Image (cartoon, rainbow, N blue to C red; front, side, top):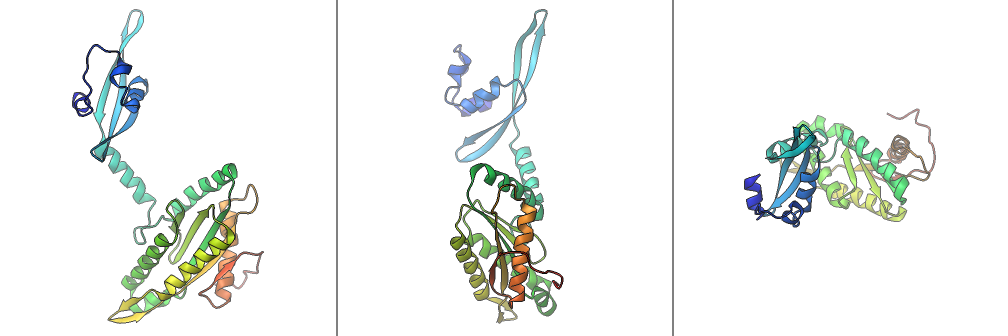
Length: 258
């Protein structure tokens, strides 16, 4: 605690506690809180995390005072955050994984109920991806996954939920965009993938993507329902010859889907 206060230029004089910590309200809140609390403080651009815990000093008349312990837990906190991030990240593409998409996606759907605004879901599937693994090997297949991940990261603004939800299947949950804008973005993704150069033994090849789009169009609509709608639109893109974008317009017969 002494080292921390010195870094913050806090001198423990006979002033009242609120006056001493006026320039650091978050730290003051942590000191006043009787429960254990984590406080984040920035030093020279670096975030540090401190655990503030409390032990009561009891006397005959009840609690006579409190001992506050301040402990630097930055490394432990960062390690836990890294473990959480790894559990929610697809290592190959650098996007969210299926677990992240389902957990965060459900929250986004609930938020849309409160805030309003359009929500669109894109389901995307790399065409004939199995052929890449069969002809060029799995390392080349991994490179295709990474390349498409790069395209998706550049195609949508930060804050939108993008994930790899299966082997060659990806999803993007977009908020606050109009129908035409979403369709245009999907076409941009499709064209970018179509033109993306992959090289195997100095020979270039290309791979395409099929995309299905569904829009949340009524209150109470679940993420699972929206995914089924987008999947049906994706199936229609496959039926139309692949390498195209289809917007969901109603149920289709999926009995022949491979």
